[in-house]
Image (cartoon, rainbow, N blue to C red; front, side, top):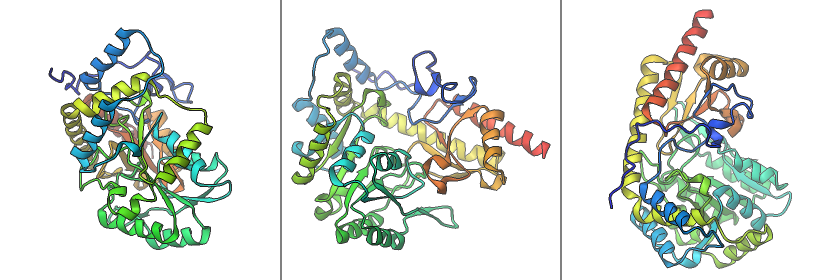
Length: 398
């Protein structure tokens, strides 16, 4: 059987499908006619192997409680071994209905109310949500933006914050959403040794691990056997194969004590078996999805290069923070010299685009906007041309 869904240019009409991305603009306070490039799901049909697996489930007609068998773990472990040379054990795996759910369970499992949890903003905004909504203390060690336009960890600040705030847990975005960094082995070793020194539990969100354009993804828990002992590794096929709505994630915890605490938190939330379709889709993705994945990744990389060239040539005042990973682009609007309201007017009212405003990711994201480049080229081109037209109109009017 051959992969059928390798056409990434055709625009699939997602309107009137209850799509969060396409059908909820007005409810989310946006004009009806905005072009959405905000939430992190792709506009590509997933692998035909996944479609076939879901069709077989639907044809069976019974959707009772479901669990993954040996074939599920074989597919998962095979993917991790092929792509990251990481040999996982079945006992490490805890399935959850998403990485954000897993983050919330880690907060509950490993910290008490009022205790400090460290993140590095600007960062994926649910990180702050699961901390604050669970009455924990958010400790921010901001990423440092160098004059060369590269984000780096501020290790001196990070260590001081951990010490002064008595941080119990850190949530790492690896690769980083939204700034697109793929952390190097040296950076992560430095981070890991700091966490080891202060007894900090590290939750590594590696959901974007399959999207690396420069460098190599480093599985944090694999770098050092001591690191593995205090690490919770969060993975999912949801971003890679565009199946986020099927709610399936695989959390790897080799430390038995930490794993038991994590499972207890899940039990306390009243959750047990996962979505039947999610289990089937994950197994098919990791067993048979390599051809689709590689073709999709190549297409996304071409879209990133197209965006870079378009901005440099036609909207030079908007700078692309060229991503090393993810399919999310971090655009710097600061050279335009606009107020926040003027930026929003430019993007939403003039360009008719629905993007994620940088401030969602922390105050360090001010005057940045996040754009989803995982869409057909024609969609991306239309979005960029809308932005170009809006900028030129604004400049003409002074």
